[in-house]
Length: 206
Ligand SMILES: O=C(O)c1ccccc1N[C@@H]1O[C@H](COP(=O)(O)O)[C@@H](O)[C@H]1O
Image (spheres, protein in one colour):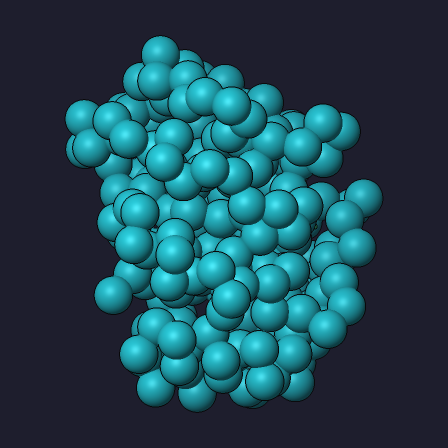
């Protein structure tokens, strides 16, 4: 079974519900334009309720290296997920704990990805939607990931994953992990307990 990351956490009640599941990581959006943005103060508070087994991930997009480092340190993020146009040199300055997101349109850019091999711990594949950097709620064609095994990096799949399509996704590809966001929400930033439960049920993890 893949590791499960649930992203876009904004409420304490969702933390209390999610810690009862075999969650690998939880994501806290640090992009101010996102409806799932949580201020660093509040993200730090939410993280303080996590058991050690759950990895807190800060999600950033085209912010300065100082900002990313400062917020990472302040909140206690074990990993940062980069969702913008961050260059390999930017990732390198962060050291370990980098998840580099790539947005997939109609093909996988293996040459671009290759440049990030030595400077990221995980790759994350999300859906390309013009004008949006994440949280689109739309899946991409998972068949496009054919050939990704050539990289040693473990990878996560995101983009519109939900209890309804998770099995189909895993029939087509074998990721290290899945990153689920809007597919388990009742509205942006509000996780839906029933959808979360159904997700883990469909994964045979409860
Ligand atoms: O969720 C957001 O609002 C967001 C904003 C900016 C960057 C990333 C964001 N979320 C990430 O987007 C993917 C896919 O989300 P979805 O399942 O399609 O809703 C996921 O990795 C989130 O971490």
